[in-house]
Image (cartoon, rainbow, N blue to C red; front, top):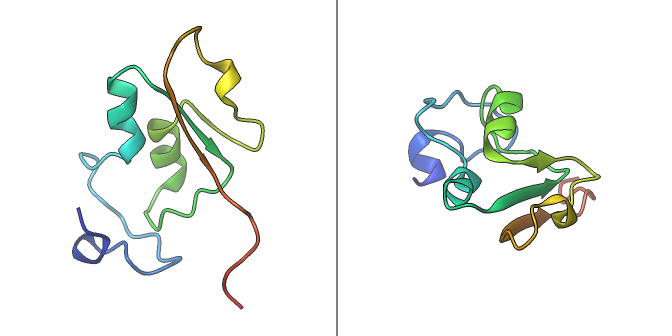
Length: 86
């Protein structure tokens, strides 16, 4: 879904989205991936805590691929925490 069509295109708006719209990592989890987010959770959606918990196996500054099951494929996102806005 395009962010500008569902209302999440603007930064820092916390727009409520329907519960049937999962984060992309949910689809990878369904395929057996261990999905990791290293810190950043600026998704522009309402109830970001629930959205983050459902989307990732781990989401913290200590999240890492090495915590997955042996041989399990993984997907990770690592972001810089420096701001790109003034």
